[in-house]
Amino acid sequence: MLHEIAHLAHIEIRTPVLDESVAFFTNYLGLTPNGEDGDSVFLRAWDDYENITIKLTAHATSGVGRTYLRAAGPDALDKRVKEIEATGRGIGWQDGDPGYGPTYVFTDPDGHEFGLYYESAWFKPSAELKPALKNQAQAYPARGVSVRRLDHINYLGVDVEANRDYLRDTLGALVTEQIVLDDGSIAGSWTTFTNKGYDAVYTRDRTGTNGRLHHIAFATDTREDILKAADIALEQGVFIETGPHKHAIQQTFFLYVYEPGGNRIELCNAGARLVIAPDWQPVNWTEAERARGQAWGLKTIDSFHTHGTPPVEGAHL
Image (cartoon, rainbow, N blue to C red; front, side):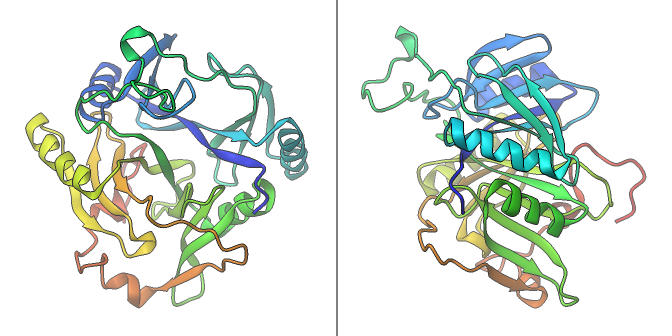
């Protein structure tokens, strides 16, 4: 791991029902609105230090727009941009979102768009959002699930290995766990830029469609928060896809729901496991092991393999 990407920063999510999605991210997840720009609304989780956690953009369909990564410093930014340009996947420099500096835009082999930057203005809370403890970015919202921060993103990819290799070889990510099918191909790959178990995941898109999203995930403090998230979903009429339960891969305690635009959202408690070994080797899961379901035996729901955004019309899975 090169440590030249500091962390997964913020994510643009597309939605055909912007107002309903804003209400979900605000009232259910507990994010705080932090400005607008054209057809986009910016929201932030209470302990993210930067200005934006999620950029919700009105669009004809659901799905993921641009994923933003913060470089570890100006030199790291320059080095990674040169490596990206050498792959031929660079789009070029653009102005960053409000509060962010110049951003280099590029794509992965699957066509997902990324933005890499370093300059960032830290969030300054207004009087009503000022926390009691000065080492906290914002006052705890006590609204809905009140997720603490963005945790990870899971893309759907036509070629998992090509995308995995791009994050590893071009951006310096570490591969932590994988699903290896009986034919030797990779059906899923978990990678990290930090000491978390994973920041970016690719799983195989069975429709063969490029550039789609499986889910984005937000971290809670405890497992109990995940159980409460299920109760809150019930009260607010939020659709629960599966969980609460525990994944075998990465051992994440999880709940999956859909936001009104159709995008899958995970509530997760994954912070107990850290990857700190400098010589870490990927943990490979076999096809037979994955067929057993989740950690305590819950079978993986069919929609987990079929639902992605944007939807693919007429797809036969």
